[in-house]
Image 1 (cartoon, rainbow, N blue to C red):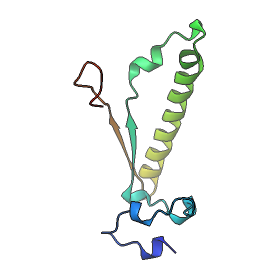
Image 2: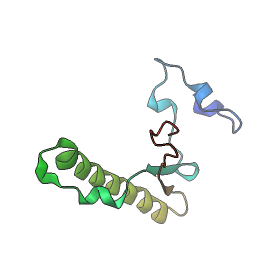
Image 3: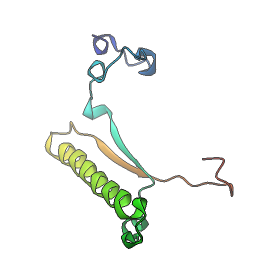
Image 4: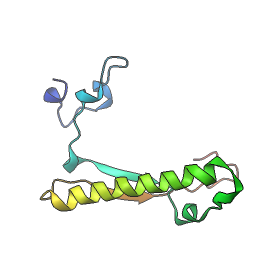
Length: 103
């Protein structure tokens, strides 16, 4: 019912009622959305997993695998749904200050 009253000029944030709204209130519309992948770089695939650090041994490999699965699924839907799929956008953040306070 919320999405039925959704106008193109209405912000999505204005329709959210904290503690009341659910995911079912906001349908995914593939033609008007994109998958944004931020700061996933090739160097993350070349970490030393033998050092026992969770981030290197488990976290990065799992994140890379799941990101690839998600990107592949979005691209498959885009390419096989007669133009009704979403785009994939890759970007990265770069700090311009030494302490990264601008990020």
